[in-house]
Amino acid sequence: MVARINTGKSISKALNYNEKKVQQGQAELLLAHNFLKEADQMTFYDKLRSFEKLTSLNERATTNTLHVSLNFDPSEKLENEKLIAIAGSYMKRIGFGDQPYIVYRHLDTGHPHIHIVSTNIQRDGSRISMHNMGRNQSEVARKEIEIEFDLVKAESKKLTDALKLKPLNAQKLNPGKRSTKAAISNVLSVVIPQYKYGSLPELNAILKLYNVMADRCSEVSDTYKHKGLLYRVLDEKGNKVGTPIKASLFYMKPTLPFLEMRFAENGTLKQPHARRLRAAIDYAFLKRPGMTLSGLIADLNNERISTVIRQNKDGVIYGITYVDHQTKCVFNGSDLGKPYSAKMILEKCNKKENDVSLALADEKKKSQRIEITQPGSPVSPSKETGTAILDSIIKPENVSDYIPYQLKKAKRKRRKKRLIM
Image 1 (cartoon, rainbow, N blue to C red):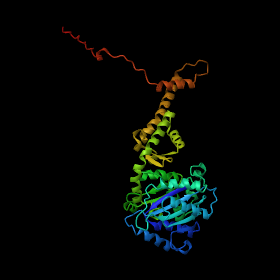
Image 2 (cartoon, rainbow, N blue to C red; image 1 turned 60 degrees about the horizontal axis):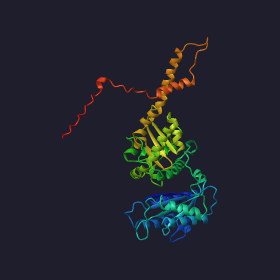
Image 3 (cartoon, one colour; image 1 turned 30 degrees about the horizontal axis):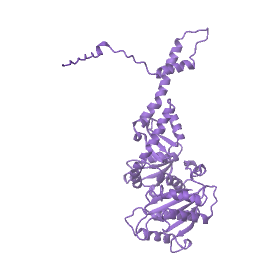
Image 4 (tube, rainbow, N blue to C red; image 1 turned 45 degrees about the horizontal axis):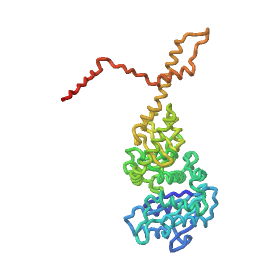
């Protein structure tokens, strides 16, 4: 089982998202817990008013919405009764057992999963802390529930592969706003809450891996002036295609002001993980001293690290961003330190290539001066010759320890101490 937690400021957005899925036949309502009426007896507004009565008891709490999705392996055949029991056990373990919550079963993906909507405002007006809930309470609850209900464990490769996020294919998207919004929403629901990014370019470094982009538009546009944000689908060449969707239209509200708060928080949270990234890059060069840029990218990819190259219109590389999928952290190269910036990485990757080019050029010149040993059979340079030349270039020169007489310092004579009798 994989649990994904989203917290927000609008209970109506989370509720509306799931209710629309029900109307479209892509979800079904399973349970309304701790409400005055049964689930099938309540309208959308009955549910919304019940939640709003609680949120009004604590107007200082800006974050008052909990939206959880519990995802299961495709091989598991889970009846609705079992899903309701799992939802109840999960909510109790994370401290929301006495809260009103609604459970929906979604039918829009290849694996079974449920969504749970609730509020952290209690009946006395106090709030339940949701800080680091995904890392603490939810993680403990997940492991216990996997054992209790005999579920496929999240650590297994089978479940990880089944829930792996895949890049969007612009050609397969149906024309229209609804299809584009749903596709982008699936990516945002994973990337925004789980990854640690410190700026919009760092967020885009992740999103572009899945053919999505957060676009502020040009500086003269109204979108930019009013701190707006659009989300777009990209084709395989990185070109913007399809209908752009305003950030405010997504239920999780991934607007620029919301992201700026995440930037500030993530900037601190990701720092302890920089060490792993530096070590991976250092080890790649240590393992293969003649590393090329493409080789570095391949080696880091084996460590679950994506390398995003930033180029200008002329194809000149001006930046490198590293996305560590194991720690879910994003770092601009220069933020890791000068040796990991685009300039230094390129110099390190090109150094050996330049050395090889010089060696081959020198070898070619020498081969042209070699006398012919047999009629009509010029001597061609062998691999051993090329290796010897390359070694001679790379090998440091012997430095003589000779020092000119004029630069030598005169030795100071030591005075003998007189013994006074």
